[in-house]
Length: 303
Image (cartoon, rainbow, N blue to C red; front, side):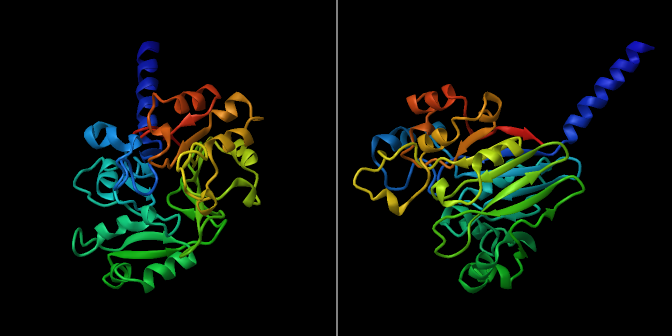
């Protein structure tokens, strides 16, 4: 009798695990993907000749197996493949919502696939901050998505929770960035048991009024801007024009974290020049040796 009880408990545990919401890494490259359009340098040469080395644009997916719902964080140029990666039911061809971080091309351009020329989607919820909302409503071709009701814009307020299910909520957090067309936000994503922070784009950490170490201590995983490993990747370019925090700067800022806290940090959104795109590079090895992590497409994180 005890044996059967243990078997039932095991089955129940497995079924429960299958119902837990999870995040999935759907891409890790900067807006232009990898290899980079027009780049014939050594950083991209191998990826042009070997499709297995190519990398999709930075994106997270959120899945709730219990309800069959799924959401994207950012609408990248790789949206078709990323959206389909999340669907357990292949007859369902669209996600249940998209959370936009800002109006730089790799983070919203994928919305085009929801339009009449492609899917002709109907009322897909797109969560956007006020300036992002206005940008989409007043600029073509995005305004056509609104007019034809391919998308339905959902207003966001910094710090205000968006309740997706009884156990999942998402909170936008303002971050400093080059806000030419919209605000920029990261997202705090909370599940029934764990939480994550997603900040794919931000200016230097000292421009932000919040403490990154404190935020890391308050969540289970943090996915942060890794556009450039250091300042030597783009010779001749004024790096002050693209003031992302270098990975080496982020690691120095977080050096006082203990081993458990460092292991929560996953670097994502890597420019084509960033050697971390290659898992075997010295840069990748250094990041791991210092106790941090690097997001790789396909990784899952149970919430």
